[in-house]
Length: 471
Ligand code: AMP
Ligand code: MG
Image (spheres, helix red, strand yellow):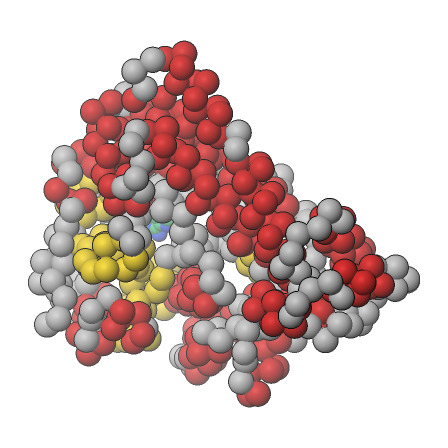
């Protein structure tokens, strides 16, 4: 055995979690093991048997817990949520980056916990496949995210609108500490717990932060960068509740998430997001809203109440500018621009508004820029011709725009209709489409010839307009 888990979170006081072993399953079988990630973490991929991936066998050092947290769900306060269908096995230690030495390994779908409320603690194949494919695609796209180490079938049926095959995802994260974890302790008026959590999270993710306001500053910066990254690839998270925002700056909780096909800023996929709270273009505002909840939760740690509000507001109010800078840098690169010029913002917004009115496919439009001609996508009367000359003139003042664009504009992204098709096949016992996508999504910028059909936009009857929470 190559890895022994450590359990620093389980060494925090009892009120941070419930001790919880995964519930054994009927018939474990492996769907997939992410061998590259396994090796990166120090596992021998052969150690990750079906029984390990379902929690029926526990690796050395496992001290399984379900973490408690709270959160605002669609703006409504829920004082206690917590891992209702997940179990943190432990932490792998290693040198993952500067000051970055721990990775959580968690089973998602591992059975009921004290936080399950009315849920069954289980997951079915659909959401497990979706999270595996999308989180690994995000990683390949260069966007911070939790990872998928593997997935297994339980051999049990899970009852939703009908019975589906049960499955468990093995998720890897820099940590599973959320905005909602801070809200839980603040909501309980447990100031000592809040302080312990802040010290723990700071030492794990932002060891240079000398106090809670500096910690907040790091989180604000990480989220501004993250959400700019999402928008640069057309990613819509779909359920940005405060319990689904990780302090580490990783994308977490792939429920009703989806990538845009046709670009429109007000796109919403989630069946339960009736007001468009988490629409595509609302994501930065919602990110800021969530960070305001974190700032509020941290206020009691400040020795001076009045100064606290002032300082927290100052830190928080950096967000719009940080986001705008990160977003502009991303979209500048997508247009082939590395230098900064005054008219760049207008050039970017000019293209996006023409894409919206043309219902242009987001990914196809930007990858067509690599060939200098996206007139097929930006097809509204006169739209392309009224934009392209200014762009061409601007490109002439760049060194190597082709390389810049090739690195910024992915060709293969996890399109919803392909994921849905892989899930449908999986329900019928055919896992080949899933494996095909899992492989293709690891090379979004340089697809193999055989993957070129995956670059196509959905036909009108293939288009997925609604997605559902991953329960
Ligand atoms: P999510 O929408 O995935 O962020 O989940 C919100 C909350 O519901 C979390 O506390 C989850 O642990 C819990 N939850 C979701 N699905 C289930 C389930 N099948 N059984 C128990 N708890 C669940
Ligand atoms: Mg969640």
